[in-house]
Image (tube, rainbow, N blue to C red; front, side):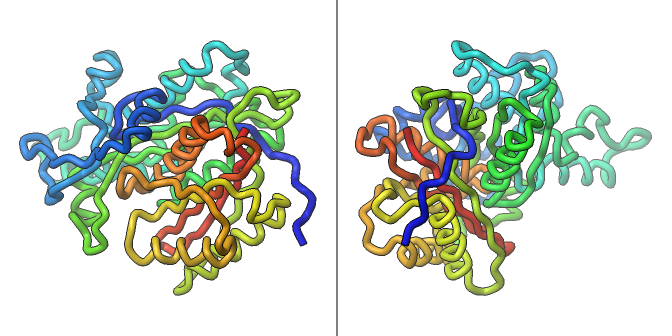
Length: 359
């Protein structure tokens, strides 16, 4: 028996993406429509990596994209986040905006910029005395650098939060955003996650792993508002119904299936309500576990499979899954009123899902 439909907890009003397709929402939608392959061979003159392919944001350089002021020591992850939030703010320019004091920023990450952390630590051991390290680069070695710098850059004075939870970071960031809105700590939340490509990440996470996945990068952001803010529901792209999490040891499919069942019951939806399924694992055992969990809960229900476009985008995977579903839905009238299911698994034992009702 399916419970009565639950009231939405928040509304996604707009989104932006800096992705391997390029910059901005329109570029992302065009790239999705053409299913363009974004994997390229990293230029050996710029990237000292073992990878033969990677999904890179094209021609991305902080000083070129953001200007010379304030970007001399800015790392790639921070620049990606600053750019994506700039695009998100611009896309909301025509709508009434909350005061900057009431606008929160919640940003997911794997652990900050691994390249900045490793480089700063190495300089402390190898660089010439007396200074050893460039103090201007120290902020990049702190996990919340991207979120803090982005808020300062765009004069956002509401709560500023960094969520570090690997591939499940986007779901945790979404859940945290709902809590901020639910207790009126913010009137709006800019929520998303960022992942950079770098030599350090390439060597840590492995080049061309056995499961065939390729590393990717980018930043996707959502503008989230209280569900009541849109009045009769004419505005907005999707309502966030619920988010659920679990922890697994050696059986991720069973734990994720349990998360999905709790979420479906709480949201009061049935298999017939599901329009899209968006698993996040780019390949390997976790991808198989996600597929088994979705099959166990939704069976033979006909649903659109949202593609994982950019290989392993790490912490940014869930926001990219969400914006891909939103972009696909805008061309599909049959999606209106139905539900997109977003799932994520991380190798450290985290599982999670979110249910979004598309408008």
